[in-house]
Image (cartoon, rainbow, N blue to C red):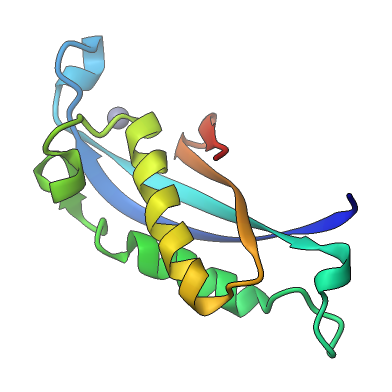
Length: 127
Ligand SMILES: [Zn+2]
């Protein structure tokens, strides 16, 4: 089925430690980058010809990661049980963004969330 994929990005700086993982065991930080991609069906465009306003996606992704800014991720509630590996962080971002998007733009769905830990290292979460 033909559809559109629309994306917006946000960034945050935060530290973490990953016990038992070589160099990552030491406290260190990253400038994380997130891209939220949403899906709109071809027949789902509004009267202005848009599936969803980019600013809406941008608000959702920015609000989603706002609480991570300048935090030690291991201390945050979502990471009490599971250490904040890039995989866990992107999974938490997905669930939070999905819930926000359901309220902000119920006719679109999250296609995927991408998270860069470094410019060269990216993880993708697809529900
Ligand atoms: Zn790291």
